Length: 231
Image 1: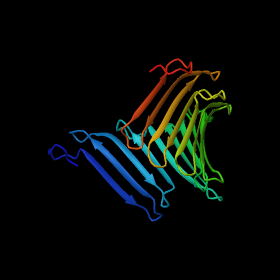
Image 2: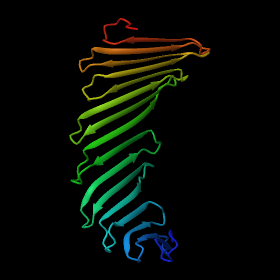
Image 3: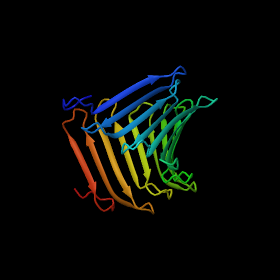
Image 4: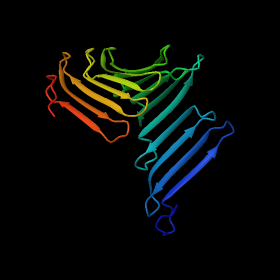
């Protein structure tokens, strides 16, 4: 690509496919005098399960950063996606890993933020279905020592008219925020949002009710958690 019409390519992309199905794409960026400024080399396996990107950020012919993404398929139908960030010497800088069950109802995302081989945060997501049709969704975040640091749970009734969501911001087992939504079968809705202290004490509470025709809206606000409406 000659962006300024000076007869010198400013960008160049070359793609090749090997006999083994591996696709290699080299993207190069040049100065006006033809000097290489930067280059990215992307390699993808024939089955699409692995991809590597190498970045030469200053055009000196050496990759200062590499990113490798791989997908591993388990015998049970689950899959594990891994992304590794490395420097020019191959040292691990950071790592991301996502494990998903075969039915997609459970997953865990793990982050190694400093490349020391330990995942500092692990966030798990689970979905379960009750016999009455209700759906429970749970998020849990844990640290490297497997200590719970935060969680969230959302329950949706079988008919989808009632949703309750609770959030524990600090992982101490006490919900700090509670949201509820009730939808009328013939229209209208009632929504509440409550905030609690670390000991479970109500701090403030909001509520909104909308009539079925949408013409009437009633709001409530308890600013100090004393149980009395301050509006």
